[in-house]
Length: 83
Image (spheres, rainbow, N blue to C red):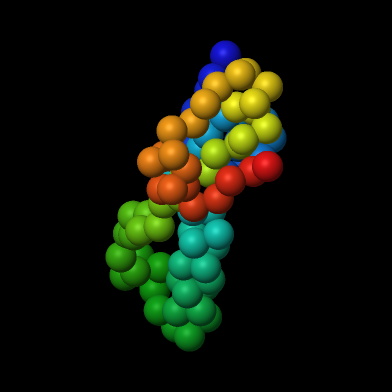
């Protein structure tokens, strides 16, 4: 059954596609929070941030296993293809 996940790791694990916030971007932005706190900022004064980077990852191995054809337009928009 074709399945969509929210994280890149889902597609890497065999799910057909993942579309969601970039975990790597989350970590980079969290590091800036840590930096600000270590420099004396109060955590309660830091703004809440929403994800800004999203990624679409398509697992072509899973598509082939399920005998699915992914439209070229969707392949072009993907941030990463897992062969």
